[in-house]
Image 1: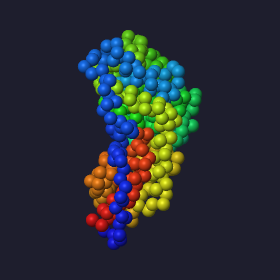
Image 2 (image 1 turned 90 degrees about the horizontal axis):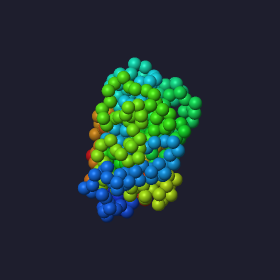
Image 3 (image 1 turned 90 degrees about the vertical axis):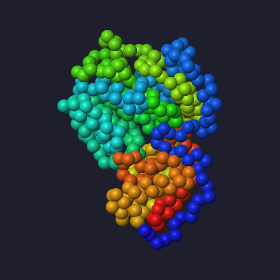
Image 4 (image 1 turned 135 degrees about the horizontal axis):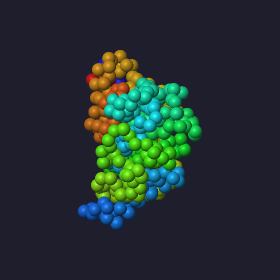
Amino acid sequence: MADFSPAAKPALRPQNPNFSSGPCTKRPGFSLAALQGALLGRSHRAKEPKARIAEVIALSKQVLGMPEGWRLGIVPASDTGAVEMALWSLLGARPVDVLAHESFSEAWAIDVVNQLKLEKARVIQADYGQLPDVTQINFSHDVVLAWNGTTSGVRFPNGDFIPADREGLVIADSTSAAFAMDLPWDKLDVVTWSWQKVLGGEAGHGMLALSPRAVERLLTYTPAWPLPKIFRLTSKGKLTEGIFVGETINTTSMLCVEDALDGLRWAKSIGGLKGLIARSEANLKAVADWVESNERVRFLAEAVETRSCTSICLVITAPWFKALDAEGQAKAAKAVAALLEQENVALDAGAYRDAPAGLRIWGGATVETSDIQALLPWIDYAIDTIART
């Protein structure tokens, strides 16, 4: 396509090529030996297994600095299950504002409008790379948002736009934010995430955190629709407290529990939340320093303060790429990602299927900054190589 000499093939390779945005790479130094103490073949309701499950809850609250009075439980179906549980259990008491700016937040908007069919629902939308206009939010309504757009690489920089005296609840899908960003707990009422993101845990289990205001809603409001068993947080007008002390709704994998504990203990060993945030931010800085003087790529996130330090999304801006039509750009971006995978320097680093064509590099705390730095010259090389094909 272009007549120029491509960037030289780098000599240095990342020691760990896993840059997937979920399931994410394991912590540094992980081996299966860390799971040898897993209580396999045991009932998750037996005393010892239940204690391990409760330890996951306690350690998660401790590392995140969750305020007193909040309840945290392990729920089915990863972050998706946790968000759906919140939507179906809590919404309907007030009008709803849903903020949609990437794939998963758009999915929550579809659920609210098309599945729950809430008549007093508004969708406040933004294109990939931007945040919705928060001045449009009516905080007498319930609000649903994704704190960090996993498929867009755009995050809310802070919670200043949320009033402390809000009347509605704020439900925040935080799956690629928890453990990597300082969440404003006093401005949120429901926070969800999964084990498979920042701490590199195994998939299938979600975490649901409820503020006292959210618990009050559960106890004073009954949805108009039936709830399946795996969504039920109350029984006979009372909160099912067991969920928040280790009595899970469905069978929990004790192997995954042991893995979650390993990740949480590692988090404590590197300084807890501050250490996790520092590692993620260092990864973002490494990419930002490279992008600053690079004509081949830019961040999908348009404002500097909204750039995610976990799901780092890039679009290709090389002149040859920009000259292609949309279909050509999609094919070329996939070819760049495929070349990175072929060279075993970046696995699963293509943009999400619904996102603009480009790359998505996971920069969460389990990723070593040295691996990010080793990868970046390979992206230059891949883009220039595909330009000549």
